[in-house]
Image (cartoon, rainbow, N blue to C red; front, side, top):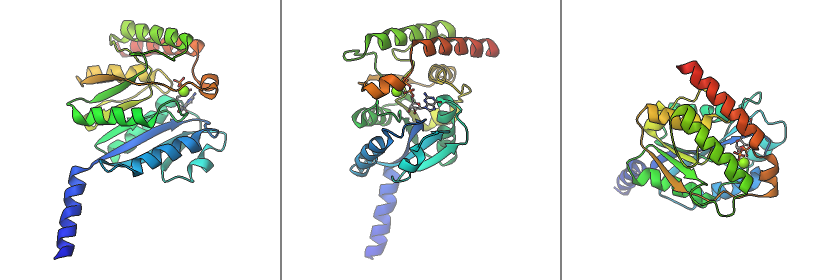
Length: 247
Ligand SMILES: Nc1nc2c(ncn2[C@@H]2O[C@H](COP(=O)(O)OP(=O)(O)O)[C@@H](O)[C@H]2O)c(=O)[nH]1
Ligand SMILES: [Mg+2]
């Protein structure tokens, strides 16, 4: 009798607990990946609202990122060669699509996003009728280096002019996707222009987009390694190419 009840109980919990996938596109992050994965896996273990898996997409890293990641309870898919963060995110979304996840959250692997904000985008996605939640660094830019604010604003303007979609942070790596968004958003860009492309595809598919404020963490490490304004120009060039190809 008690076995039947237990089975029933597990069945009900499984039904109520949504299955989500946290995706980390990752390239040469051996210095920080241990801490990043330690924190995420600890916090997801300590919650029981969702049934969460973590998937690290190793984008052809040349350092010991994978060896370090293997010490954690996470799934790992490796690209044999470096293909870019757009391609890494596409691989992650494809995995989620094929394996029946109800939602996805993408988060940078360099420690720039806090787990508090990870849970904030996840909760917002699951508490409101929407398909794409963007964690925006630009709704409150306090603490953000001025050069990054300028670069991001330029990319928002370019995204608006070239693709016709306007958001406050077109380049954020912290995003939550509903099942509908996982199925409908098809990323074609391999490079960093995929961030703007996702918003464009979401609009094309009439998906509901929501932005919530987040605080990116700027350390010496992430500033040194992260994108700069020269890369911003490359993103604009690639967005233009993509738009031209599709008209
Ligand atoms: N730079 C770079 N990052 C990649 C690549 N593939 C995946 N990533 C990951 O993409 C995320 C964002 O990269 P980052 O350079 O920090 O960009 P930023 O934070 O937007 O300035 C990190 O988690 C990287 O590890 C790649 O080919 N190049
Ligand atoms: Mg970064």
